Figure 1 (tube, rainbow, N blue to C red):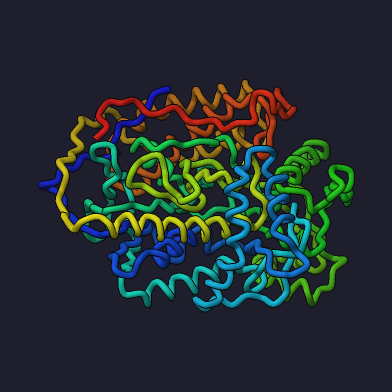
Figure 2 (figure 1 turned 90 degrees about the vertical axis):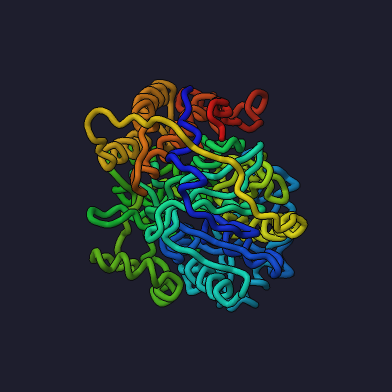
Length: 535
């Protein structure tokens, strides 16, 4: 396996402007903003994001936040539901910590001004109605509205949008900040006492995804180049129900729709989940997604259908106003018409390894949210545990990293870091868009819901070939850096999928269809990068 150069672009401390801060938070989703709010108020905290402040996976989350809020529900049941969904790879200590912290996090959000619906819901894999929603199917939007408003009112927090994190800066084995590019300023070196990575997932490595365009795996790739440990990169969760209409973006149809009683039917009207799992439509996402793929193969049809026609139309419109609006744009009335759906890449379970406090294996670097592999989700994430993870780990990172930073002196100095290399610029201009589209199509074909060795080896060969010429170049645009990051992440995903010769959770191999606890009830750790030019 070959590796990219340490830094994607050249820079020198004498030629690049500098910014100094106590805490640097990379990412403005739920984990990043929660981390900034949890940091000690005496610290200067800089939060950066590569796009608009509202543009994150968290803002697009339709589902809710799983939390035990009723006396009839129990922490033990939420814990067991999470462990069962995770297919033997959850860290029980992490699960217990996150689940028990959930009610307090909801209370904090309410204090910040988030408005939640009075009625809780149930989703696949849950044994009780414990899903807290906001504005029907716009939980993420409402939560992020409240968090960002609170951050804007907090004097020690500064928010920068349109700031692309090119790489993490390292010196003498520690993370000391980040190299970024701001639209109006060019390259900047941000030096931080402690850095919190909350940059989200990597759904854009797939052609069909529920993720917004920002989800290109930048944080995972940057952490990997910096020497942090990544693991479980074979586990990409596919959401079972993504709107499949020509001309539509792959719009998520929330898990809560099936929680409300919707049926899944094939093209002949057969409610097929009844024969797939005793929980039918409320089975976990891995089970439902794989069942849909099998049904599509049997019927030779490109999708299946969600049916809500048997439900109360007033309640349907009340609970799912966003979904109803989008479907109406394509002439679909969700209270009467069948909604065409198929699975799409949704949530990256693998990522940067962190401990219970959010520490990574790279000193000075902390991480929270989808960019991480915390041990909460195991091999398959339980619905509505993702926003919860971002809240709990964001809080932990803000407090713990803040405590470390508060104990460090204000001896701001620029370490002698320089990235000097000879990029390959000969040959024809690289068509970034074409290569990006080729990568995303290949990942759907060979790293989708069903995988096998022949396809994985083809994917590995193709991505390795693209990496040989794309990773050696020096780009000057966001599209180029995103391509390099997606290639890096895709290669780690394919490598990891080849190693795990079993089927577990969201990782299904048709050539190894059974779960193998004897050999594979363990994590797959990505190989460390080569030691040359480590910075």
